[in-house]
Length: 349
Length: 245
Ligand SMILES: Cc1cc2nc3c(=O)[nH]c(=O)nc-3n(C[C@H](O)[C@H](O)[C@H](O)COP(=O)(O)OP(=O)(O)OC[C@H]3O[C@@H](n4cnc5c(N)ncnc54)[C@H](O)[C@@H]3O)c2cc1C
Ligand code: SF4
Ligand code: SF4
Ligand code: SF4
Image 1: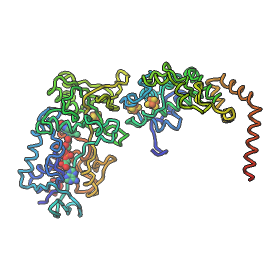
Image 2: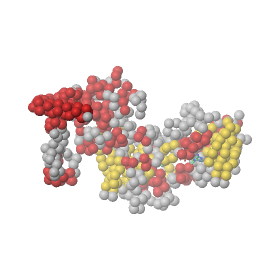
Image 3: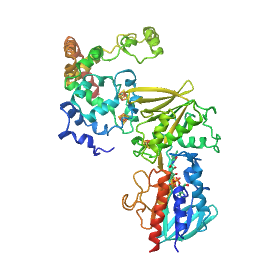
Image 4: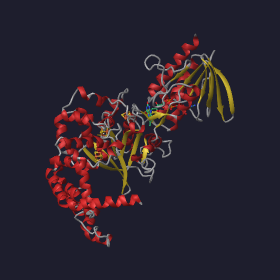
């Protein structure tokens, strides 16, 4: 029986590994960090959109399915440093702090995921300059009872709970100025979810979302959007957050209220940037080591988006999840299962 | 962006929509790099100093050029576009890399050429006259709070003390202790400048907006001509002599 190399231990890679193992294949899972679960675990996601169920309820069983399966060998804190050979016999060198080993694999699945866009380059938002301008992933950590603020939303500047909160959509997405014209595909639902979580916990707070379009195409997303407006009185203003300044120790934002055709300034206590998804360093590294094609933005390019969505440009090397482009968890799990089936079918012949 | 970049928006114009003004604007070399569709996001408006104080919107400028409605465009060329401060904030923030600033500049040039600008620029008569007859466009006594709604309290206070301040600042510099112009240029310099305008055709262009100013300048030049031409000859001779040395 051939062994499969899975690179990346996020939700996609975990699902791929456990599906293959259940079908009887041996799997080596290589994860560069010392934990499994990817971004969901790194940023301590608390509740997931759109159902507001605990992230742990989703990610823990996926991790457990991997850790409890004896067909899977997990290499944490490890990197694939070189690959030679071709399908169906690859030789890969796996390196960690203890040394290097070489193994032979019948197929390789790349599930290296994404990185959150770093908003420091959008200087006009003042991230890194103004303490109370934070990112959506930092808010995920705060809202988690096991996070740094024990579940409280706190202003980094003074530790106080903010009363007026503005959320800026599309930070680092739909933006030619930063070279990312694509849509992040999760920002809208994540912000809506965070707005609801904040209003639920602090009913007296005011939450304003500055957006261009609310892209609510997923299962239950539009309903969540309705709920935010109707039940939680979250205020959605159609206009992109344009600039943040500090006036008398208070954050002040500029935008245009594009429905009323007027420029506005708005004083708030905290600004959350809905930072989008960018191709991660880990994905770029994997593309280099394996010699597979990337698209214009660094994400991995399928051989054919319609007909072979999980095959890379190289035979025997497969791709899945958020390393192909922005994707939510539900779809990552589908991708993980799909790529496992594809690989299993291929290795059987 | 390279010069060869294709822009589907500007390429369509020749054979499709729009009237005369629309086509003239779209033909301008700057437009190709200034209009790539518009998200209607309002980033440009939020950062625009003109939009903060006047009935003007760079988003509208972009939308209008995409829609191509001739009447609206003509109206804009006669009025609203003259509010833009040409600060380029819109260009450096627009997520589609549009530049309302460049579109407006092209529209202004075409408005002048096509005779649409006279009314909008009437308020600038004093400035134009000052440039054409004295060689500087803004005089301290033109800077008053009622002409600048965007001034804060500090500017208003400073403006009320401008003569005293200039006296103090420019003690010993004759020509600077004035408020009816920024500084007093020499007659010779002004004459030379006027000559350049006349010969380059700029004066004729000014005439499409301020016809009477052309007469004023020409009279001014005639009055000085004899004296100034003699000076020019004198300078030329000096130059020749220095070359021979
Ligand atoms: C703020 C925020 C909130 C979100 N909330 C939700 C939500 O509520 N609901 C929802 O459905 N989705 C949500 N998402 C989307 C969700 O994060 C992704 O769908 C999911 O994390 C993608 O999983 P993945 O396994 O493809 O990638 P990742 O989670 O990025 O995992 C990739 C893994 O691969 C590892 N890796 C990378 N490169 C290498 C390498 N070269 N070698 C070895 N290992 C490597 C990484 O360390 C990481 O562990 C949210 C996204 C953001 C930005
Ligand atoms: S998902 Fe929403 S926040 Fe993200 S880029 Fe698209 S429209 Fe913007
Ligand atoms: S260049 Fe003109 S339109 Fe653009 S921001 Fe400045 S004033 Fe506004
Ligand atoms: S910033 Fe650009 S995309 Fe946004 S409204 Fe203005 S012109 Fe349109």
